[in-house]
Length: 119
Image 1 (cartoon, rainbow, N blue to C red):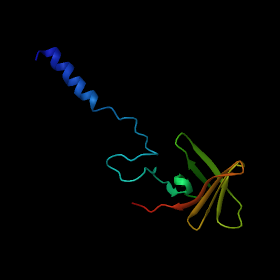
Image 2 (cartoon, rainbow, N blue to C red):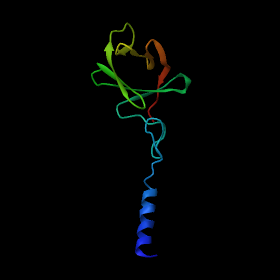
Image 3 (tube, rainbow, N blue to C red):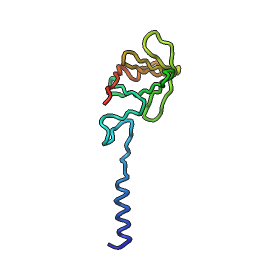
Image 4 (cartoon, helix red, strand yellow):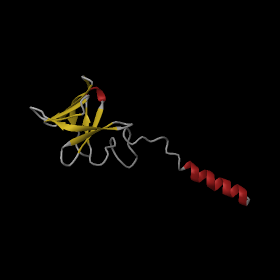
C-alpha cells in the first residue's frame, strides 16, 4: 500500500466512526444510557397514548418549561385551587399528585401523565 492509498484508507475509517446516524437525544437512547433521554433538571412523564411529556420547573417554582423535540415553552405560575398550574395564556400545565395534564388552545395534548421513576 503506497502512502496516498494508506492516507485515504485511514481517513475513510476515521470518517466511518463519525456517522452518528442522526441520533435525536429527546426521543432515543444512546448505547450508554438505558431508557429515553431526559435533559438535566427535567422530569419525564409517561402519558396516555404512548406520549412522553418533559417538564423542567425552575428552582423557585415561578415558571416551568415544557420541552418539545424542537423547542422549549416557558409557562408562568398561575393561581390554581388545586395542584400546581403554569400558563402563558394559551398553554396550561397542571401538575397534581405526581400527575400532569397539558392543554393548548383549550385542547388536551397530554393526558393522564404519570411521573416516571428515576433509573
